[in-house]
Image 1: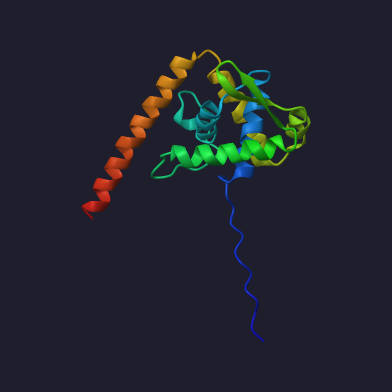
Image 2: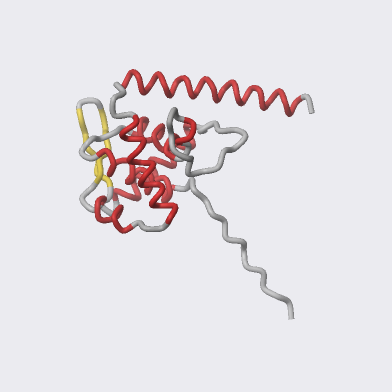
Length: 167
């Protein structure tokens, strides 16, 4: 009799559920502060790569050769994650003069307290660290930092393209 081959379980850290949990962790750490989708997308990227920041703790995710955040893809996944978390009252939309913002929802604190796996404890710790790290940054300073990362990623990508075209 032939053995049944089960599909290999793939572990992903970049689907809507994972991005939503990271958003809840960030918003919970920042409460009552609210962020727009652009800021949450940037914070989501930096949250798993805290070692890239000056004085940052060990990153949650291992380094990869190309670290480009693929901004549009990541933004869409973070947005899907926010919608998922809003359906569970973990995130709320907060329309403000500056635009649509997101804030930790009514159930966020209890949800975050319930997360006890080693990875999720590290995630909450990194979310607290990153919110404190950027607490003194103005919007202009934060945006300048993200622009610098973007420029570095473009250079990194161009170097990678050159390396594979000469191979």
